[in-house]
Amino acid sequence: MERFEGKVVLITGAGSGLGRAVALQVAKEGAKLSLVDLNEKGLEETKSEIQKVVLNAEMLLVKANVANEDDVKNYVDKTVETFGTIDGFFNNAGIEGKQNETEDYGSDEFRKVLDINLNGVFYGMKHVLKVMKEKGSGHIVNTASVGGIRGVGNQSGYAASKHGVVGLTRNSAIEYGQFGITINAIAPGAIMTPMVEGSLKQIGGEDGWEEVGKAFVEPNPMKRFGKPEEIGYLTAFLLSDQAGFINAAVVPIDGGQSYKY
Ligand code: NAD
Image (cartoon, rainbow, N blue to C red; front, side):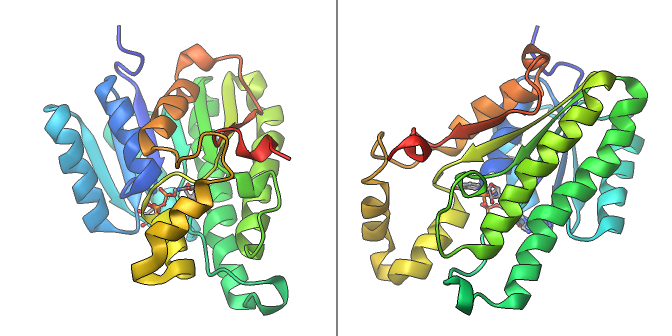
């Protein structure tokens, strides 16, 4: 029996990187998918990647801005209309924002990063939890970051938003455990996705970013970037019934870097 046979998994930020990797993993294990992103082209690419390996995968694609609560309500309603329920929710869409020291960090940039990374995660939980509470089960995984459990620097908006995601996760997990719902967060280190590539390009430019990347992973105990599929394995586990007694956890997946002195 596949872990996600007959299960409905909703994923935001599904048009790229970690969202796409998790979509692929749970699709291979039998899930029906509701894939949400602002970027429709990205969603179409995810759909065709999945169809290469899971020919008859059932997928709904929904364009939404997670910072807009009406859009969030709409992607939840559409998922329930199409598949009847939501069993797993990977609440993942996010942006890094421009890097700068605190005094130079733009206030508009700060608001934008919080709107997407923090408000978006809150709206997602708010609307999905109603569905899960009614049926008495469900698993939610929010995407935090090592920037949500440690100080990284040059990332005021990102750090505030991801620490906020950790707080929201713990708060809601305490409220909803009694309804058979688990809520956890993952705290990835540097995983090679378009977001990290963009971040390295902010530092090293088009020509120097790969060198910057090599230097960047040097302090990591594993001396490498994480792979999106490694996020896929962890998140699929946390979204499955096998992880049914893991609740309010924030799981680092960073090669051990966040524990290094
Ligand atoms: P990515 O840029 O490859 O993918 C993010 C996706 O989110 C994109 O498809 C983008 O279109 C979508 N998105 C952005 N803003 C949106 C909005 N307002 N509404 C709907 N969709 C929106 O990045 P990724 O690396 O896959 O990041 C996914 C999540 O993982 C983010 O929350 C990010 O902060 C977090 N994260 C990533 C890393 C890493 O190293 N890659 C590390 C820690 C945390």
